[in-house]
Image 1: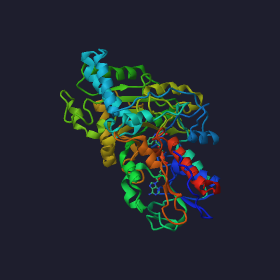
Image 2: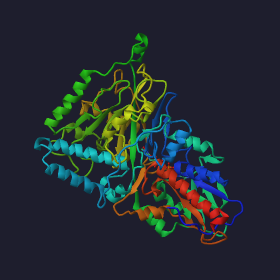
Image 3: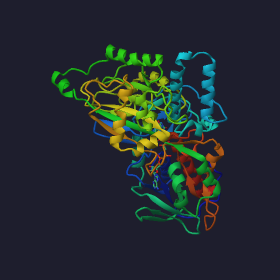
Image 4: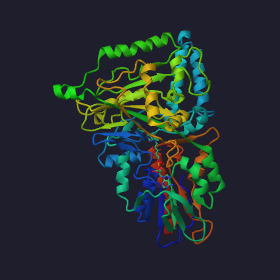
Length: 557
Ligand SMILES: Cc1cc2nc3c(=O)[nH]c(=O)nc-3n(C[C@H](O)[C@H](O)[C@H](O)COP(=O)(O)OP(=O)(O)OC[C@H]3O[C@@H](n4cnc5c(N)ncnc54)[C@H](O)[C@@H]3O)c2cc1C
């Protein structure tokens, strides 16, 4: 993706702006500063990290609203995950072992392939007729998981070839970072000399004989720039490219922006107050251990649902633990109505299920504990352990396989389970359901989620937790104007050429820099193999900085 060096920029003092302080922007700015260039990073928000967003709720509790895992490139491998490398360098994490390769396929949409696999499963006779309805719901659940893994709005909207082109970095485990993924971005931003927060770029004027100028929302300006590296999300480019660039971007760039897709994947966190903390303090006893009774009651209704598939079913997907202070317990929700496709109320569908808001049926899992919840100095959950279950969208692999990762030494659960002040659960929701969830008020979202235990009696709260005393924390990636989507993918008509067109530098057409790259693009959408990841974003930022350095260098021409 690195363009050939074009004529060098002939300015003596090179002034470069980087728009966006996510991993792409930070990598670009770091690379340029290491090469002694004068760089200003303009970030619309008030923190670095972009979609790596760790929300610190208190000294003890933080939530990963965005990226959670290093998707590979960790351990003793040739190609390193650069974000992971920074985390290792800063002493935030140790190395990790390897995992499996990615299946390759091509043609059609992901939904086509899921349908074929489903038909093959039915034809194999492995699904007893009486369990077909239940299996169908499990299949729909898997489709939701696929959306969450790939960020696609719907699998019918995703090119299967594009999915096959995505590659797991060798040496890939899905390792979480105890300090949260924003921590590495904070380190990188802290090493830069000029990062300006709250500078929302509104217009980039380029292409004239003079330098490039940037105008921000509040009227602030940067003038006489030699080059700009733009790292805003594909969602922002889709919405704003027409007004952001003057003159407009070349037609092939606009076509690529339009062809590539970005979907919405949101996390909805529930923070349950532990009302039994007073009792625990008084008696100085640990939280109640996993109870056989709770496990039995969780398994019972699921088994009934298998025999009578008309109603919704939930299974504790992590399988071996009840919901307690220090356990990671996942529930998979097997809704009887598909979120989209069929529409209407399915025959035999439980009446109660037809009365909940449609978006709730896009909630396909609820997990207590796990790596999205960062706890320090307090019991309950894990301190960044990559423990799995249902919901975490590990790229390209079933979430259940994540279970194995809980044994690695450096990701031990928090201190022994004593006196958790609250319990945290996370639900994932994707596509149209996620957008509808974002449009609903906090109260509406909480009221909808409170219906889950009625619909899925298998869902158990930890001791001391209640649906009456719960706080909501959630992402709104789809409608946040600084993102307008979660991560990118190739749509049915997209090809890797679109990604290349998006990533291609735009050259000046006039003036002393004519022919030199002056407008460069980086970000997760600019990497075919590692699209939708932090490391993909980082690599594109570094690459584009290198393209620019090559043009700036006297040897470049
Ligand atoms: C829910 C979720 C889960 C994810 N899970 C993982 C995971 O587990 N592992 C993984 O590797 N990746 C994951 N990702 C993807 C990963 O977070 C992104 O691919 C990566 O962080 C994108 O980095 P970026 O620099 O390309 O863009 P961003 O992080 O979006 O950075 C762009 C920056 O530009 C700023 N900006 C926007 N408009 C303007 C403007 N007009 N002026 C100035 N600044 C502007 C934004 O505020 C933002 O900070 C996840 C993403 C989401 C949303």
